[in-house]
Image (cartoon, rainbow, N blue to C red; front, side):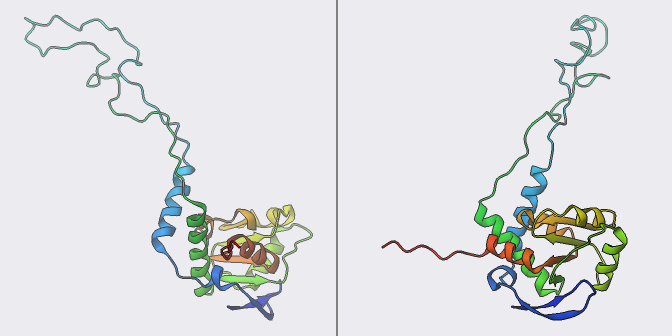
Length: 214
């Protein structure tokens, strides 16, 4: 598929070819949902903890004798129904990690990239360079591209000047092309990336033909 090619002044200077198997494939909503749940689960720390009746402080002595008091029988003050007693079925430290096959993760990312492309929410530039690393320069070039919402700037590699200039803009973020993921794309309205980053994403996600054994 063809997409407009911009410069940092927001001018269309040509067109660029985007791989159809990455930016023009069928959107699989179920697969995207599964990938998002996996990423959100893997981001959980799993450190929540509550004390059971065996861990809270307090005596183990019987509260009062079993019979003859006119009151309900009670065992100990650490029982769950007592104030400051233990917690029943409360959370304990555990891993919430989920796994997902690599092919399915890549297919989910292709789906969200294709959805962005079909909605004309991808801006491809010849290059992105902010030598001074100033936030005002990043605001200027994003505004020139017609960005009216959150934006994810995807770079071919790590560029600290771009990171420094974009990180103070509300709703904007920067990621290297090698670690762009389904959730990061969905969390932003626009994708802004230079041609080199596009090629890195295509090399990472393009479906390779099956090898035929001789």
